[in-house]
Image (cartoon, rainbow, N blue to C red):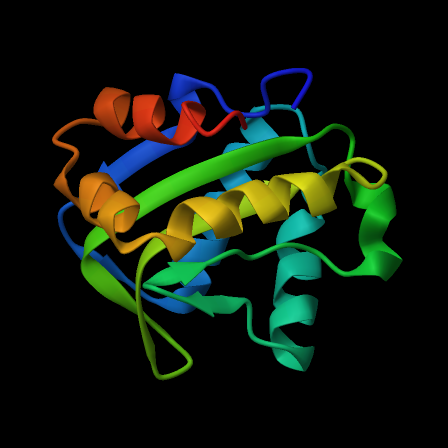
Length: 145
């Protein structure tokens, strides 16, 4: 990716758990604080989730808005949050919630890079073992996002 869509301030680790709605809200709030989306992006994430789950397998969910809500996206960015207590994502166990805002078609490239990272069980184990947000950031950033 030509420019960074992830900064250290957009990566968090929580020792506890969260509901799916809380996790989506945090993802949207991080993206909004980064200047990537409007305050209505959380609603867009919820709309997407109502039609199709953003659970991807390997303990990963990637909440994002619908095509109809592209106007809420101001810039491309990611949020990465690890919930060590887990998130019940519509009956699926999730540890990592990666919020995505992609301007234009950039979301497809971002999604593919995240999918590749989380398709490797060794990489997922490294992500789970990261002790600090800085360590987690370094592993994700090394993929080129």
